[in-house]
Length: 275
Image (tube, rainbow, N blue to C red):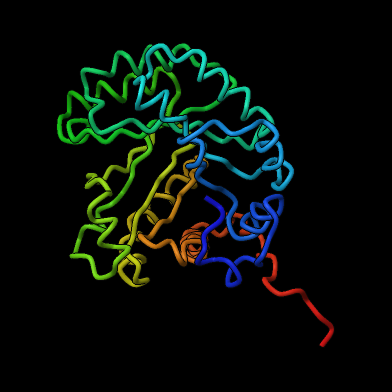
């Protein structure tokens, strides 16, 4: 996601053509979740535009289409998978990881299907899996089973941390909507690879969001000291200040690990003038 109505004219210049929106977002953050690809495989020309708007070091964590993960549940997916891989090829090194988000009904008994799917994937990409079945978090045997399948494929396990969000009742319309839709996921912060990925959901109020991410500041700093290259996505129910919060999180981590490179300077919303 790199366009959001609440950002327009406030964080990002407005109006912007489709060929400029991602470039302006990339002035705020150096990574993005590719959520739209879940609903449809984009045209290769569209993806080429994404590449043209970003530096080679910019990170896309791009979601596999739902026809692969949810409708066909990783079985008989050669045609849509090949179409997807061909479409995203213009990203080149920007495709930091392909994100395999599985439905909540995808259970420990389905892990052999996932393992077989991962074995058939091309090694030219890195892969990261998000699961939502509670047994993967509550049952040590299920945890080990999934970790074994992921480790064999050098794939990462993406935690979606909603613990701070569900700590107290919702207080806004956006929070009430998220309360009904977002999964109540247990906290998990173990990395399996050198490229851990975290999805964090805070509150629309800044204070509880910052308080809730302190655990991830500690974990991320430690990963960096270990030589890993983590990617952390900061969300709130309304996402109105998500880019600002992401930069604040980065600053908090950089205070612990000063050698961490600074984020780019955002493109001014208003043109610079001499007066």
